[in-house]
Length: 236
Image (cartoon, rainbow, N blue to C red; front, side):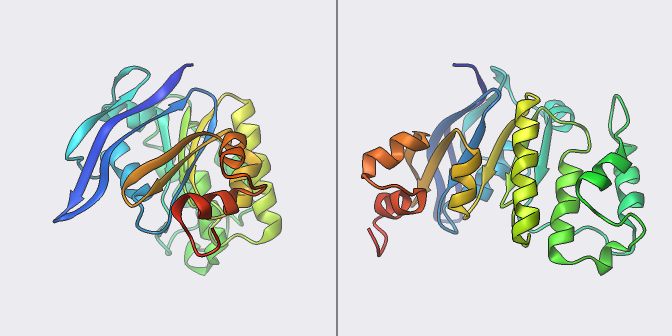
């Protein structure tokens, strides 16, 4: 076992509402790890705590066995938020090159990223569809060629064909040694690409481990059915 990211006893409240309650989990180097949970389960809050966009109320986060600090986040971690809103008055090529100026080390290949995401470099971002904006967000998450990638609902707004291409891209990145942490309500997507998962429900970690073991534990053949059984859903 080679944990790249370790989260230990992490807690976060908003007022009197506990969103993360002493959460502990680890993401192994070189895996695609899926985070599952209903809306409000704490997935996005966890991501924001990892990225220091918000402060936790307790616990620790280690990266490569060292306390995770901002220089490491800036250099080694890429992030796609759930609802990404880039400036509409710029073209994708202009925006990516502007952001690329802040990247230390080798400058990003903007043209290659635009081609990979199938984006029109000459079109204003404000004229993009929701799916095109999502693809632009993916390009930005990969701009600095990070070794660790956090994706919050990466297939949001994507049509079926582009969704399949994205899954292939994630497998390709993983084969190159990238570690990926993603959240998704698309259980079929998670089953196709993730090696391990964690289930968050009512601010608690309910399961962490391989998908096959989770299915066997609930004696079902689909991840969605296992999830519903785990949380006591209407079809459990």
